[in-house]
Each structure stands twice: as structure tokens, then as C-alpha cells.
Image (cartoon, rainbow, N blue to C red; front, top):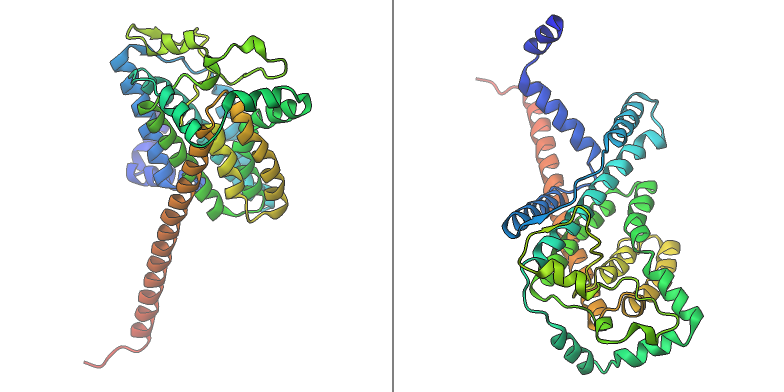
Length: 347
């Protein structure tokens, strides 16, 4: 114990902090600072809204074994011989940690903001569907009468979690860090936008307006039961520790956000892109048949995904140009200094 105190007393605290920060930057190299700030903002929003409305969020499970495994992998990759695995494994793991943490923060923020209990906008979305010429009930009955189509749309709808992770797997494997940074930033922007819009334009979903027993194949597994939504929106304190409240449907549909953002992020990887186009076309339809969304919800989701991706690309391109300018400036100054040192001017 005495030697530990002596050792740390001789190490400058600033140097230790700099070392830790540099190490974290090298591991979270694919996570833009703007994306990290958005995730922190979502977490803060969830906490403040929960405190203001008496919402008790569920506690996290014990993750000590997970962190031990991450540290072990980090140490292995740090001291192992240079290889493809030692290069990409830390980037993949830390990018995945960010993605999972951001998704959890988004879930909690979506619950917390729904506690604001803004007026439900089902009539607005019904009128928008009619304006688009969509007969929601006729469409879902059409799919319900075709078991193979209903099953295909259901499986595509259930692929959202896998599709969120897919760009991380593919882009890390190809070592396209810039494209991965754009994806993570666009995901954070799109998730934040979805939560904010849904907070001010909540809805109970289209499937709550019909009798589910009339359908043979469609299960509407993504729907939000009305009693659960009512519990979430009531003014009384709510403890989510042992709650059975399920997912929240909203405008825009976050399933549709993922269904558009994933192929956008992988459009340069042509074989994967073509497969995703087929799967995500089914996913967008599945938001209506399996999720019980209004037809306008996936349209809004695609728009949010596209705008978020464009914004993320612009932010990252600007950051890249700025970084290149700084590097070139420093190089020019170093070369100028070397020339001046080699040929000093006479007094």
C-alpha cells in the first residue's frame, strides 16, 4: 500500500488523465463527439423527465462480467502482435458499446417524454392516410389473406435489431472508419429526432381502432396496448421496475428509420446493399401490418433517416476538412522551421 501511494504521488495527475483520454479516443475512434453529446443529452432528458413526472426507470443488470471481458479483450489487442483482429476488434467492441448505450438511452427517453401526455394525434394521422389515398384496413386485410406474405413482412419487421448492428459489423470488417462514423452520428441524430417528434405528436396507433380477432395471420406484435399507453401517460407516479409496458409506436416509425438508414449507410457495399433493399422494402410494409403503424409513419421514418444521414455526412465532411487543414498547417510550419534551421539568415 505504501509503495502504491508513493508511485501515484510521483506520477503527474495531468499525465495520467491525458493517457486515459488518449486511450479512450483510440478505442472510440469511430464515435463522433457530436454523437456522444446527443447520447448524453438523451440520457439527461430521460432522467430529468423521469424526476419531474415520478417515473422510476428500471435498474441495469449486473454488467461486471461484461466489463471484465471488454478489458481483457482490450489488453489482448493492445499487447498482441499487429494483425487484422487486433486492429478491428477494439473498434468493433467500443462502437457496439456506444450503439447499445445510445439505444437504451433512447428507449428511456421515449418513455420519459411520453409522460408529458401531449394530446394524441390519431385523427391527424388518419386524415393524412386518407390524403395519401391509403385504405389502412383494406391493406392489412389484403396481407392477412396471404399467409406467406404476412410471414415475410413479420420476419422483416423483426430484423430491426440485427440491422442496427449490421453497418458496424460490415464497416469495421472493411475498415471504413469514416463511413462508420457517419452511420453512428446519423443513428444518434435520427433517434433524437424521432423521440422529439413523437413527444409532441403522440398516437395510439392504427391497430387500436380495429378488432384484432378479425385477423388470422397478422399478430400486430409491435403494437402498444391502449391500457399500457394510458398507464404511461397518466399523471400518477409509475415504476417501470416490474412493468409490462411494451414498445411505443410513434410518428415517425423508428423501424422505418432503421430500414432506410441501414442501406443508406451500406450503399457502397453493393452485395449487402441489394439484399438490404429487398429486406427493408418488406420491413417498411411490415411497420403497417406487424407494427400497426399508420401508413404515414414509415414515410416519416424514411424522411428522418435520409435527412439525418445527410446531416451526419455534412458534419463529418466538415470535420475531416478541418482536420486535414490542421495537419497540413502543422506540416508546413515544421518544414518551414527545418528550412530556417538549416539556412539561418545572416545578422
